[in-house]
Image (cartoon, rainbow, N blue to C red; front, side):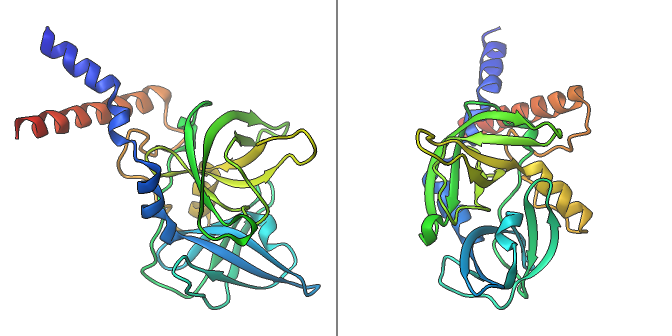
Length: 253
């Protein structure tokens, strides 16, 4: 009975086995986060944020970053600058865009299933606020909001500033659960920021013919949203059990 109880407790708390520090999240994902440099038709410049979702040069960002763009290119955290970036696909309803550059073997992020996101969950954001490249900020999922048209938003408390649009929002396992795109401005508004759930990006990549870089490990393993709840729960228990087995095997060693 004691062994069964131990296994149950370990399974219930196995989520914590997958949690990473923010230092780990930043080190693993910063190489895939880019600054998007925009020259607009009127001659003005603008900077946004994006992140690599395919090693052959597919970049995700906010759609409004590309508005009125005459020329786009990317700056990586190494200082390397890409050639011209071309707009591959746009989704105005959820403010997402896919860009393409000529590249290969780029580091990528991994996408989590955003249906697992809950209010109160800790997050880490990597972006370029005020063109300060690869700035790390932290916060919470403040709430999951549904707009009148049915589109979901994540309200987040992580600080967002101009040039942060398109920043990846990471969960505790270091996988992307959202894409930051805007804030409520004005006197008295504090940390009322919003992100597009990652499942919209997953769907967009599939429609564009690119396999999304789904998280392979971790308790929030990405599962298509149309999978029945009982199957999702079963998958979660399976992951918990695998985590328990790994822990027990490690203790034996």
